[in-house]
Image (cartoon, rainbow, N blue to C red):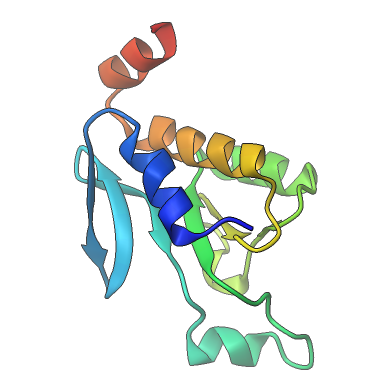
Length: 128
């Protein structure tokens, strides 16, 4: 089972990442852009689930390159990946840490970083 500390470890291994807070939630940034953040459900989110039980445990949001990539990530149907109405039209996915495979979490955080990092920094990382 992954934890927020696992997300932090993965994120902080990437170049030029800062660990901070946004909207009261732990957030990881590159070049001032948030690429991953703790994302508990709001009361409005929970109401939107209606009779369905919301995914439990810690949830993180992770940026993706664009809406096409978001669709592809969700279509891959990896355990733990999902979205909610609040994220419609926004290039990010949600990840339930209790069920996501470690490799899929690592890949998602790195891809989120790549989506937000300046192109020269991303290119240098990919060429290492």
